[in-house]
Image (cartoon, rainbow, N blue to C red; front, side, top):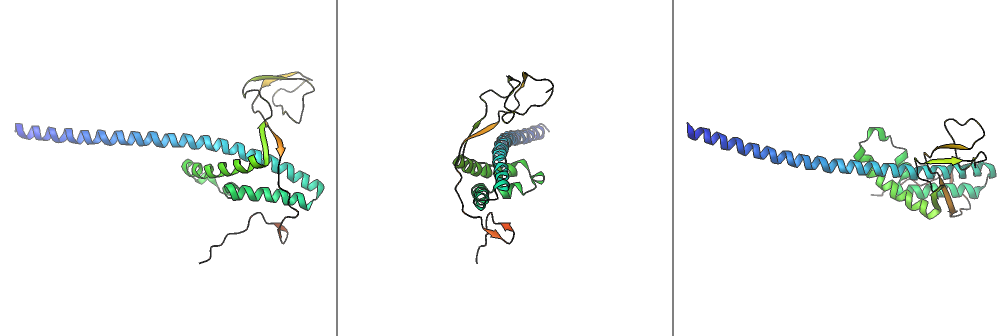
Amino acid sequence: MQENLEATNRSLQLKLSECSGRAESLLTESKRVSSELSAAKIELVELRNAVQVAEEKLSSLQQSAKEMGSDELYGTIINFLSRLQDKGRLLDFISTDISTRSDEEVGRVGRIVYQGAKEVISDCFAVAPLTDAAEKSEITLDGNYDKVSYTLSGNTEGEGPYSGRLLHRGWIAGKVNLPKVLKAVKLDDNFVITPAEVRIK
């Protein structure tokens, strides 16, 4: 009887040791996944900032194109979109419903989009914060503040000066280096941003 109890005890201790090892392994894996998810979320924030800059510049260029009706300007806009697609697959990314994808999937794709968009924007624009003030810091604007450079929210009654918390530093472009394209390629009434890709067997 004593020998059976000892054998059973040794068996239980062995199983307990195995379970403990598996638990430690799962804990390590959980920490790794958590770290990767945190990194992916940071990359997504940076990606959104880069996309915001691109959208603002595209909006400005599109407005100029409407005013000028210039084939050259339309060509420049389409060329810029084409480079964002070519380098970072930006159009593929923003055309995909990411609400059905996991954070890991979005993070993996977001890294490619972020790197490509950053390369294109750095080549075309010298982007810098509009103000050196730190976000969430308290700042004061005179009553005759530059309304192009600052957007106010909250209690904006009165003539100023206005004091409040800086929510976003804004962006400026110190240079614009967009390659000139004489005329955008059109297919019927549409501009071709990037051609369809076909692999021949």
